[in-house]
Image 1 (cartoon, rainbow, N blue to C red):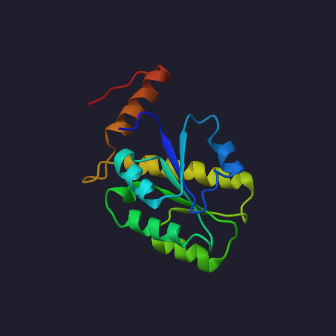
Image 2: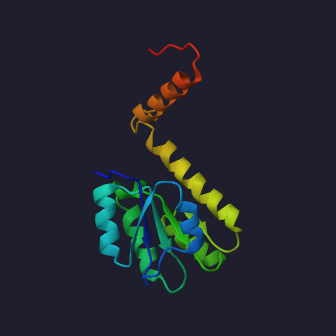
Length: 161
């Protein structure tokens, strides 16, 4: 099991995490694992369910597209959000990635503050989606615990049944 939240960064060219992403991660207490091997991404995703998979996109990264399709076609790994980091913003490329199952497409079209906001929102949406009990779609134990903690911290009187 994961002891610390992890983000996986996949770059077929073995590039390091882009500077803007590194700054976004700083201070969040999130470990980053960088790899250029899709088999490592699959193994780590199956073993530790990372918070997020960042995939280097673009025309030079067809392996990333195939990796996204592979992960999103498996019910166990499909819950891991995939964000594509692209060097350009083209409608055809955006459509290909979303058709492959990507959850977000980040490109220079968005200024750095919006890119960070999009990544924050993706993590929040994922956390919210994972806290729902799958068969009833009602809040699961994590969401219930979070709400109880919020009430306890508020100091207000409340009841739980």
